[in-house]
Length: 188
Image 1 (tube, helix red, strand yellow):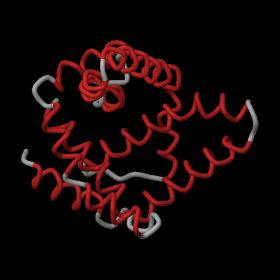
Image 2 (cartoon, one colour):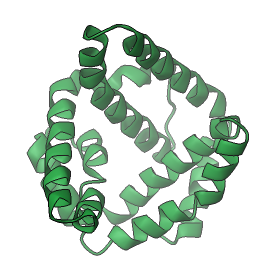
Image 3 (cartoon, one colour):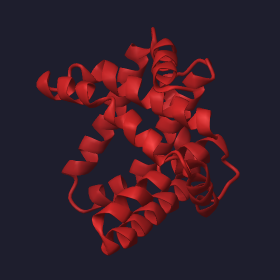
């Protein structure tokens, strides 16, 4: 699919669902905010639940890509794989850091290689974190620049979100995430 087709499909997928996606965002934001204000234990909790929320969001946007309904409870769907999501996050962080020690550019390139790992884990819950990471490297081979250009095409939305103090983000964030899920589906 072309960038235009990915974005057009994303607009259709989120149409009429911005409200529920915003409520999901508020739930995640509120939980993360509470964790931020609890000394020490909150940081540990945040470290553990952030990857589970990331996996939940991947599941939600993959569900939207399949033209299926979502519910507010889906925001916690990644928690049944918290261990794998956490381990995947740790692996991505370690490998990206090690590649970045060579120079910044290899770290950036590798971060693009690993960028679909959470979508792969969401799409294939039977995989281990290591397998999801390997599969991400495999499917991103030859597609890293495509993803970079796709993400670069949203620069205007990021600027509008910044200028409006996040107000445009109510639409832009689901739009960007849905487009990324469509990108994953197009290359898998």
